[in-house]
Image (cartoon, rainbow, N blue to C red):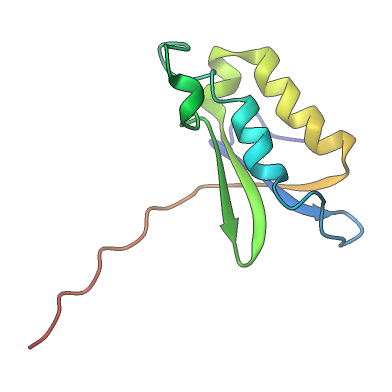
Length: 109
């Protein structure tokens, strides 16, 4: 399902049949469950922010969770959990790389 060489996996909120996955906040819930899995391990208060290894986002109007392969390397059971979540819910998964937003163009006066 996911090649071992991919750096990031996008779990998309669309089933293989093309239906929108519900509930609408599924991505935030999944990323919230994974918040304790982070570089250096869980720390007090780490549940208050998302892990850099599992980030909810919206791409082209579709809710997604971007899962970094570092999660697989450091917490294999957590990786299996998110991948199995996608499989069990028949969600589309894509291997890709999330690029940072380009810098804003300077204002012209």
